[in-house]
Amino acid sequence: MSHAQNTQYLDSKVLTAPPHRLHLMLIEGAIRCGRQAEAALRRGDRAAASEPLMRLIDVVGEMLAGVRETKTELNRQIADFYLFLFRTVSQAKVNDDVEKLSEALKLLEFERQTWQLVCDKLGTEPAPGARPSQGSVAYALPRATISPPLGGTMPTTPLGISLEA
Image (cartoon, rainbow, N blue to C red; front, side):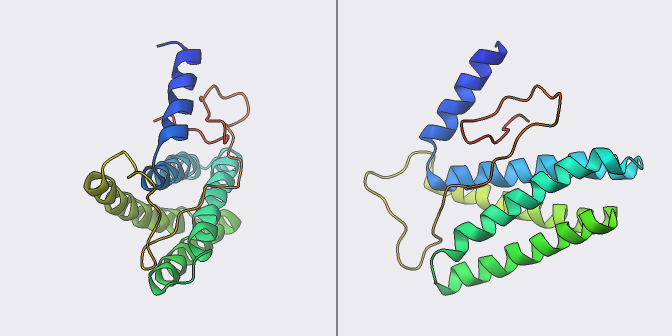
């Protein structure tokens, strides 16, 4: 598949995905950024870790903003979790702390597994006219632009989010 075809496929995948699938894609993107930063920090390359750490902070910040928009007890609990992740990743960035980053990545992996189960249960197609119920998690599209590293060739969605594995 050519780069243009891959980009077109990813654009279509994002534009047609139901909210729960988009959330899973965000989590997977956050994990990819975190793994890039973790590898760079482990080799002692703080400069190379900076950009993916900033992208990771942006994604977690957007996940936090998305759940704070609706005031339910479940959203408050999820917001607390994302706030903890945001602080942990921010500390990892400020202190070049690979252990803090690893802690956050373990939590993101668990979150990915949880959302994968949600996606498996709900399927990939949204129900016609479906909206989150009063007790459910509200979904919001990300506002941050997440771009590939300088000189990188990762395909990105119209939202600027790289979905390359």
